[in-house]
Length: 109
Image (tube, rainbow, N blue to C red; front, side):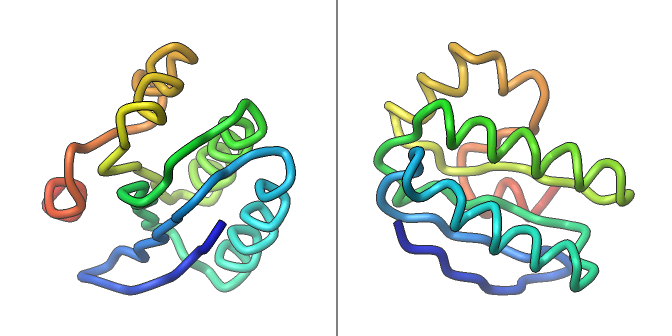
């Protein structure tokens, strides 16, 4: 899994590529914890290049969304690939976390 960061408008864009599973999710959790400790509040998770997400990845996303909400921030997701979107939908995450078709859509809202 690769994670990269960029800033646009008031949002921090976290782009994730590869696989988010039981092996890579702890690295993702650690990096996200660092961001919250630095005071980031508006985070867009760009999954355009994420090929696979397991239940461990879902757990990581849920924990991040809860931390953001507790800190007065927001987390949204965008550009979910077919398999990742299917996992999100089956788990009911689309009703809990805003999901946008594209990065531009997420940034405009």
